[in-house]
Image 1 (cartoon, rainbow, N blue to C red):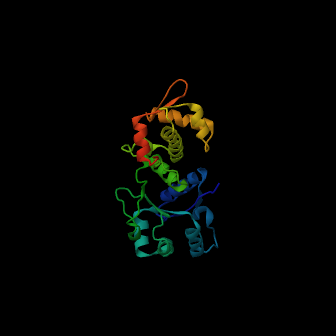
Image 2 (tube, rainbow, N blue to C red; image 1 turned 90 degrees about the vertical axis):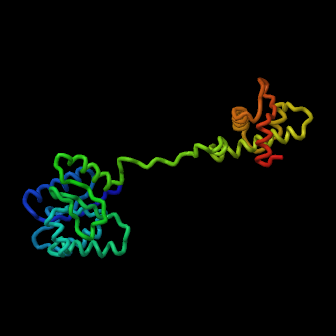
Image 3 (tube, rainbow, N blue to C red; image 1 turned 60 degrees about the vertical axis):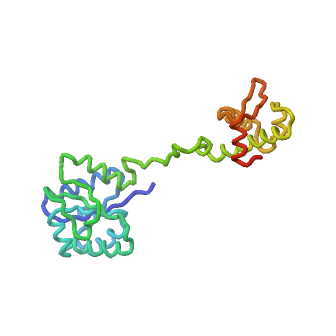
Amino acid sequence: MVIPKVFISYSHDTLGHKKWVLELATRLMNNGVESIIDQWDLGPGDDLPTFMEKYVTSADRVLMICTDKYVDKANSGKGGVGYEKMIITSELMVKIDSNKIIPIIRQKGTRRLPVFLQSKLYIDFSKDDEFEISYDELVRSIHGSPLFQKPKIGNNPFASPIDRMPQKTVDSLLEVMKIVVDCFESGSDLIIPYPVLIRNNMSMSRTLFDLQLELAQEKELIKMDSNKRVTLLPAGKMYAIENKLV
């Protein structure tokens, strides 16, 4: 299992804000996301630019916790936030369509983003009473497990029943109808006995052959009596012409 890694970028606005970021990082760790944060990954004597460059570039995602002070620092290029911005923007020049950065709105009453993030979709953590909803969205995004999965494309509702069948089924039905049509064309009797059909079947199992006969009858291409004698119906003759069996 690949464990996603996130680097959390934020400004030290207040002790309360630092505590909120720490609790977010801790909860992410508990939910299978390795969180890189200065409060436990950076210590006395460590080089701040080296720490930022190493983890901003190596992390799978970068969470940018946007407060008004953070946005001001990013826009002005000041401090650690400004240095992180420089690293991130240089990397994004190589990966223009990268969704590596996830802006986190933490301001109260505003939704300001740094200028270079204006086009990015953000996750709104500004309302504490809606934290769980926002957190679920964040964790799902990091793990690549969206709440709503794009459904598989369905069949054209206006296509013919033949067009909507799997290709293998269509091919097998075509083969069976070719056998029926060949027997009909070459025989003097309009009713084709089952043993005659079996003798002409050289390409598929008897089980599949019988299933395709039943399918042909369901589609009213043929009529089959209790003794499995087959009559080619008008729709079956038209099928033969349309599919160039005659």
